[in-house]
Length: 169
Image (cartoon, rainbow, N blue to C red; front, side, top):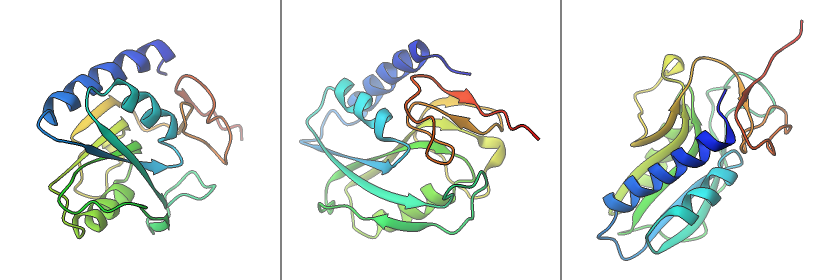
């Protein structure tokens, strides 16, 4: 669906936009939502022209299923404080929106100066909550995808591109 070359070009463009937006910050806290965002966040922070601190939060609403349970569980919380700091939440894919909505509400209670979001992929046709990422790499159709950190049952995270899963019945 999306080639490694297209992903790299879009990550560079996103980093330029984000660097411009946060140009006045002394240090941006980039929060990766594990596990799916780990490759994206690594590539993105290397392209940012800003001082950054990286932290991670692990939230789950899928497990090994292909459909969201709509129950978001926080499996790993941030190590650092974000009060009064500029924060960018990096997500692999915004699907139903439940995970990102839950994470934003949680982090919002911690009084960050600015709280913004960047998602590699967006499936607007699947949205069930009123949440929109501030920066989006690619809008995609309603297909189950893998690659570039995104998995199906812990497989295919290591692909350098985004591909659609074909289910055989």
